[in-house]
Length: 264
Ligand SMILES: Nc1ncnc2c1ncn2[C@@H]1O[C@H](COP(=O)(O)OP(=O)(O)OP(=O)(O)O)[C@@H](O)[C@H]1O
Image (cartoon, rainbow, N blue to C red; front, side, top):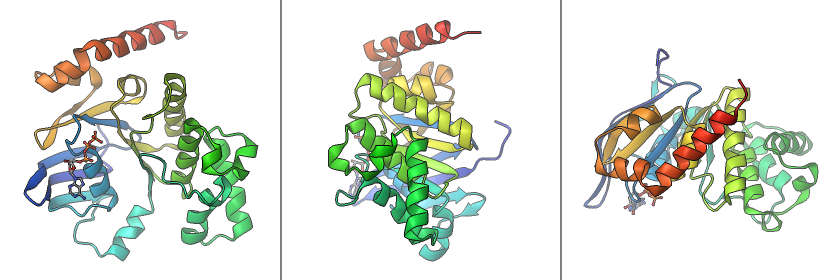
């Protein structure tokens, strides 16, 4: 990577009571890359995401974003930087009492100072961007399939034109076809909008089809962060089981079949 990192995490510590989740964790995120963050359950992937976006103040260490160390800033100063983030949480976290148009318009009214009609028009554009049909705008979250909820939540994460998109297990709960379509959407949006993507996932197919690099959390830190091919060769029991176990082999051969079929 020749670019400077857009996010630098250095010496991050996170601890809940006696439970140490991260100890001296380092990680870089580069502009326009899709970085997959994987690791066993409870290794602190979501806590890492939450620390970077400002929802979990770390116990120690530094997080530098766009060249600015966010640790030690007041919450007001932080929020200037955090507005450049879009976050898609597990489960989508849409307001159930609002239709999709209203859900996506909300951050635009609150943070961009737009009027309601302006923000709802922009909300419809964001919904279209994520592949939802025009009639979805008037629907409530309970009326939608899981895949549509994810797309709507993604539209909301994109409402304020973020530069960095954080996705926490975006394909969890989707059927394989819906998950593959969502993976494709993430790559398309990254290419079209020049986004940088921090993607927490357990989904091996997602890693193979979307990620430029993969970071593995283990033993309270980032054990390795590199291309998938290099990470898969790392001499570590969890990595070997994950990438070379039955599911890992199936994902790899599906990926190889897919790339062989691509023209050119
Ligand atoms: N607010 C909190 N208070 C106490 N413990 C917490 C808190 N948030 C997270 N933890 C603990 O930190 C550890 C890491 O949690 P985290 O949700 O980041 O794991 P994860 O790697 O995302 O796991 P999974 O893959 O299962 O989603 C867990 O043991 C969790 O119980």
